Image: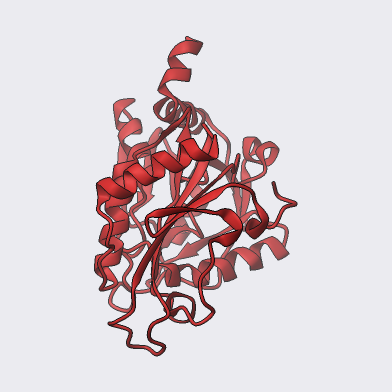
Length: 297
């Protein structure tokens, strides 16, 4: 798939209530969402024909739109059903699901109250966000130049397209140095997250993760916190200072695309792919693929 441009993939895309051929899913160049980032989106994964926590993702899509000041004209139930129908129409059982909603092209300018709100869903096969062989050894992270902004300056609780601009810049800069991704600090200088995934650390048998007060409280993040607590592990959601990085033993990322990904390096700091990380990787796999996990026992 990597060698095929995304606009040339085969299949269908659900767009404003209809299934259209992949190549015909187009918008105008003067679309407000393109110029002013008035767009919100979700990332979901299907395992064994079921989309993991679909309704939670769709509810967050609606909430992100509300935060950005618009209403998606399809209900949570309608979008859920469209996702399931499209997965079936694409003929996939394991796939990545991308719903998106945006302001259209009726007005051009900062203000666009009269623009139509559009919604689309695309589904494609995306096996692993990071190189599978490298993932097992732990990926390497750079430390990003840009920081997650103060929530008084950006709608950090929304999964909004504009918030990912500094993520793209940071990931590109990291890859240019040979890293897989970058860790970002927040505006106060505390550890925040990676460019598209939340971050966790392990020390003395306890799990530590930054408080999600200026970045997205990921659905995978919440799932892994629950899994860790079910294991009887102590989980601390707290401020994580950069000087603590030297003392942590393990590190991993969580996200729909990343799933649970071990980290071996963050700049000058090294981490082991330890038992707690491996256990939570396995527990997450079992949680998203319950039928396969049961069959394997």
